[in-house]
Image (tube, rainbow, N blue to C red):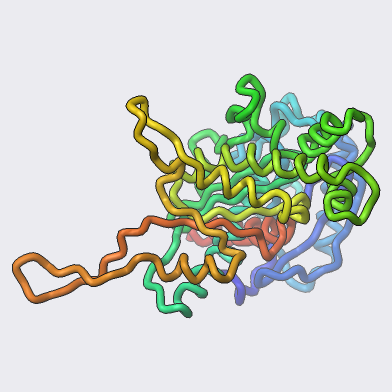
Length: 367
């Protein structure tokens, strides 16, 4: 959508350890990233570092930026640029910080802040999964077009973003979340505890009887692949359980949103061990009190990274349907269907594309 736009937007990847500053033009980074320590526990140092990082980026630009746009992890009043609440990675912000207004006063340009899951989904909807799927459907002669997308990030948490009819759904309270849904196997626990990095580590520890194993998901994936010594069966089961728990939460979300699902985040490197149980959950059955069996998700669910399944997805069940009382026929496809795919952009790039597009769309709407 903004692939040929010459306006420049400054970006920030805000992590609890480091702040990574950049600038985008036409959906591409145009300066080398600048990395500075976050000082997340000290508000004065953290804000001073943000100002310094943005200034360094501006000094490298040949064109004046039109906005600052970035993602921030955790709860916030995003439309007003106020960060506050439960923020494990930025404890100094918990009491509330008017970050957007602060940066606008410093730099004199609009500042847009969003949840990272929201920007991931928005980036995939405008420059990633959604246009890719629709282009492939058109190539295969399928008239169906998708406008809705749910983006999930698998990492330290379970992030989500929702795009409806091409527009980012921020909700009335900037609080579109699924991390706090119930864990399928432990209903008193949040689903994120079963569908994040800590879940893979915990389950592997439980299955091996060694909770202090000190391994990261990449190590556990290498064990599952047979590239590293360890309990291969436990490693595979740890990722399989993550897929099951995440798939259960996704089934609830996609039933309400009815759109494509795209997944990003570093843990997707273990997709071969995660996705089978995730699809099994999305394709599972549920029953009425009278015993009737129904699909958990009312739409048929396809793996869009599988070429054979994508072709079936594009084909659908289209057939001619005669118009009653006439000699006319219309095309009719009774099959309701959605698909799931792994991000090709990667979470970081998709978030940046989303941040860039969001800023420009907001500026354009003000004209």
